[in-house]
Length: 521
Image 1 (tube, rainbow, N blue to C red):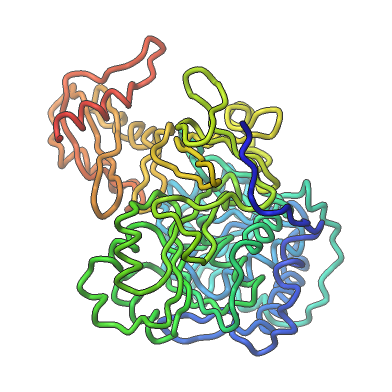
Image 2 (cartoon, rainbow, N blue to C red; image 1 turned 180 degrees about the vertical axis):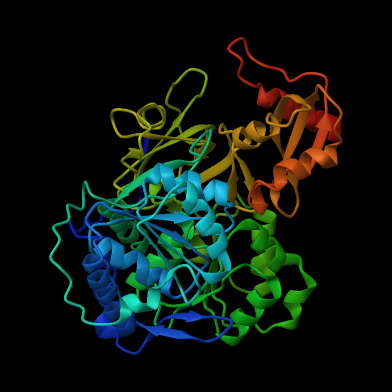
């Protein structure tokens, strides 16, 4: 059966993302839009709107055109929103890169996305310039100042006479985040203006910002959760966003207290810390009214413990990069919270639960693969027609690769996943990438990487390696870990005699996971 949202459908305006998100910005005037938490530096809504126009005008004069790809390789800074919406105003496409990416990883993304421009921060400029030697840019900008790049601030000088650009919201791309999908190496997720505008309208129908809402942007804007929920939905709703460049528990708690943060969108490891860490008791968090957890399932007992300790509303949502991202969420209403559930489908969203073995559609409470259809679903993967066809069917249903159920009241629960991705603190880690790097070591004959449960991170990558030469586990882990971002690091490694595989040569990862559970159980 098809499960439909219990909310009435909402109208989705045929409008560009920046026009929609910033429609009320000038009217909000001197209200802070973004505050850099550690320094207090502030960008008002009027400043934001004006800066977006100025940067769009300056980029156009430098030759930036509709359809050009602009890479943002940066932690959360105030100007992130300016760069994103200036690019979108000109009909450009922003590809957001993880600031933890190594030069090798960044170069792969820049090349695949065919990026022509890049902006970064001084601390990452060396990595960025190294990446651009493999994937040349027309121009590299830097937030702040550093030798070897043009200052982004120079784009915010002069007039704001933005050239007219015709944007087709249904077909023109505006964002190109990278996701591994259900398996494999990262792929560019093609999101249109309509995809993102739809998701903002859909989510805002369920969760509205009360007067004076102050949210904390602890999750990175490069990630679709940060991009849509923490940044764009907040800007659309007129929220004041307090940014953090990276997660640090003590700084996070201090900012919650000092800025009187009312809402926090986080991931399960942060909820766990708020529920159990002794440091939390030192801070006054009485202003905090609601916490929403996403990016990975959160155990109901942790959800309850956090809410009880902080005396605030704690609930979950569910989404994917491929759905812009929100699929379901929980309204801020204690009577409608269901512990451990991912909430209710947002408006205009449909769900099917499919038996992975038979392909049959299942009913309420039955576990199967979750399929989603709605206006927030991506148009496909960049230059990857086969991967797109494997993820999206002809009727617009997106196969999530997650195992879950929908109960009789419409609450979605996600319990496991078909996909092979490892979720480390909400970050996606593709086993195939780590296996490929292991296999480049001269002492490695075969390798498999599996998720290993971890109470803090959720899962950590564990490698199983067949040797053909002399090498220690520590040597092999160091060999891989110096080539990847910190969240992708292999944390455990065992030497084995063989890797089980199917007749087609595919690693039987589930067999390995079961063996690991049996061994450690």
